[in-house]
Image (cartoon, rainbow, N blue to C red; front, side, top):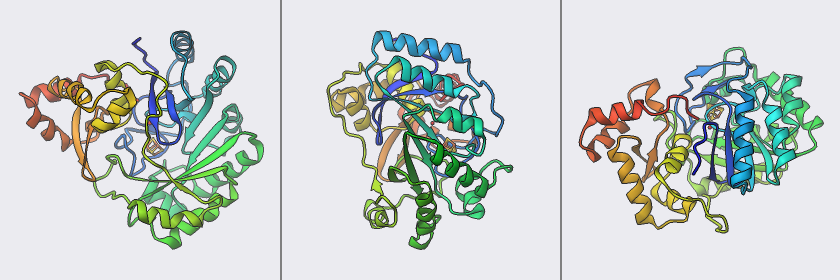
Length: 345
Ligand code: SF4
């Protein structure tokens, strides 16, 4: 498998099947610091748009990948931060539309859509998925912890303007955190805002993967299901990705690390993505643990493997778990920190 710096996968997506990810920001460079973020706390909270990674290098990698493989359902701007912060993200979407048969997708928190230039660039995508989990400035602050200059009304105003201009599909993802935005009267307020955006699809998600904050608790699938009818169209609870076969993605340590840097996964997830037996996935993960390149974290009764750099923001309780599984704690810490500090939503 070729080494890429800015593209990763194809990874399994609960929304998009096999999705090739394109990472346009350094690790956790974002306009928000959502309590549920699976990448940990935001290390650089900013609303400054600039060319965070060189556009030509990203296009070059995409061109190489299209020549060598080129098979994915979607090519998705996502990764380890907010892609609309990249000042040339529209060019990447244009390139995907012109040069591949995959649909171009933008996963965004929609916080910069009040900027006409951002809306113009986002219009290059086939699908724009916006996350919306608050209903006013106060809830925006406690759930998404935005940059202080972001005003919720302005954010929603920008998203409404985008809906009017955009001819592609707009999806909304609502992330529900138990006790924070989960009571039906609050969810109804989010649904009322969602209605203004006239989405093609609404997805309900919850903290099934390790979140940024320990106090974040998921809502049960059953309780999520009771909220679906509040939305128009009725929301779908996003199911865990299942491998539908057809495209082989070769498993090796680097490919697995590349995936785990962007998304914590269980051994079963890894087995599904790469189409390998659970035991083989466990063997790869065991080797990576021994090398101190990944750590484990137990969330909602499942063991997740993780190579994101959450420990940059504070001590990571998972290091202890890794230490139990490896010969040396210091080796684990050094190995993990020595791992690619750039990183990747
Ligand atoms: S969930 Fe998305 S918008 Fe929220 S902090 Fe993480 S990367 Fe940023």
